Picture 1 (cartoon, rainbow, N blue to C red):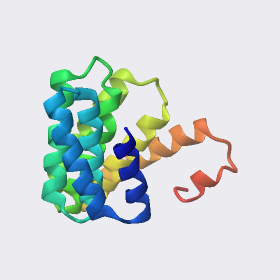
Picture 2: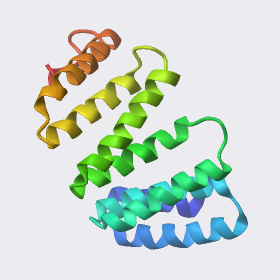
Picture 3: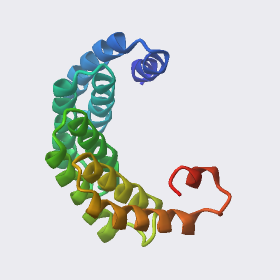
Amino acid sequence: LVRYRQTQVMRHTGDLEAAAAILRERCDQLKQAGKWNDLFHSLASLGRTLRDLDRHEEALQSYELALETWSRFGNDDDGQAVNVRTNLAVTLEQMGRWEQAEEIHREQLALERRLGPEGSGALAKTLGRLGQNLQGQGRHDEVVPLLRESLELREREMSEDNWQLAHIR
């Protein structure tokens, strides 16, 4: 736990290479020890670190291993894997693999609509991410309804003078 916290500090201070090295070592140790939940979180953190280093292929591998670990050894709470799937999609977008990322965003959207409370902030974020993805693909006619629904959900959740809404109005 101490080493994991140390890598979080390193990430925030910009020492990403050192953080990645420690996280790789930690992942190996956790895998050998069979500590699957901790391995999932460390792989996810390694993926974010590698993405921040613009090492996208390695980040994809880390995210995919994290999701595989979660699906094999996780519990029924799929919420833990949502952030990893989102980070995987963002990484794919950064690599120009828009269609693959769109598929993940659409899966997330279906999951949010099925499991999440109606009108949740998570649903609003997912709608926004899918809209941004489609915009990146030049599919502007599909973007407006998604972003409009996202805005409506966020407005229901927040007061009108909330600073977080100013950038999406």
